[in-house]
Image (cartoon, rainbow, N blue to C red; front, side, top):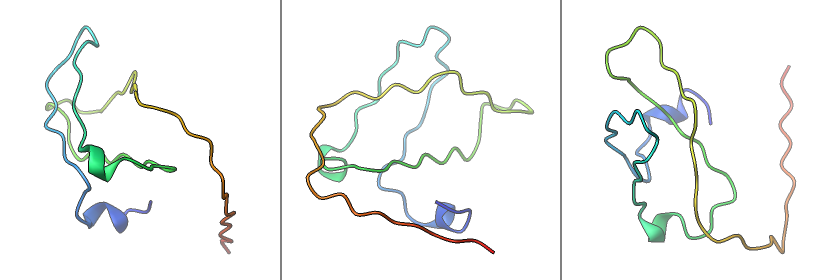
Amino acid sequence: MSFDDAGREADQVFNLNIDTTGELEYQTKISRFSSVSHLSIHISKNFGAENTKIFYIGLRGEWTEVKNLHVFAKTFG
């Protein structure tokens, strides 16, 4: 994901609430995330603080073994 990609339409947008206990869960659109092998998260704003601090992002779901793994390499320079 590049900064240019951040302007594209998201697969899903979450409106987050302040969660000081780390107990809130957000439901995903199952059809959009049923076969994810790579996940990029773009956080566009925070709750008014000067800096954004992320202490934990937890993901739940079922794991399945990748049968066909394609290697992607990008060279910079």
